[in-house]
Length: 157
Image (tube, rainbow, N blue to C red; front, side, top):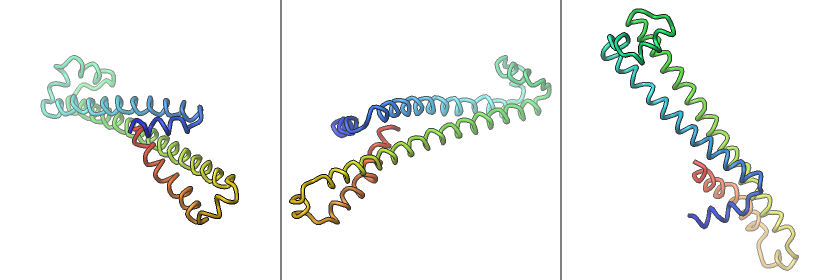
């Protein structure tokens, strides 16, 4: 696996290498946000189980007091809204990161396919006499985007 990733790394231009680094950082940030999203559910569930925690627990009470809520039912609604907002924002960020990764993998797969096809076109005439044209086209179009993108994407994630 390491050898394959090294080969891909050497095939990529400098700009694409920088983009991979940024995508990895975005993926790490997405993981941290997912963790924060899951952790935000715990106080909500605690208040749901024991509504008096909205007043007695200082950390939960400080969050609820920012919204000027005094009753436990209203504090439950505020905490539920906050949890929902955090989860929606986290999922939106994760979707954006996934979209960027998919676009990158597809763009690089296409670029590698074009480079491979251009290499076939630059070969001498004798190269094409010994090979079937369709096999060269199939190799450059089928192997490149599908297999390379499928291998690049898990490496980013």
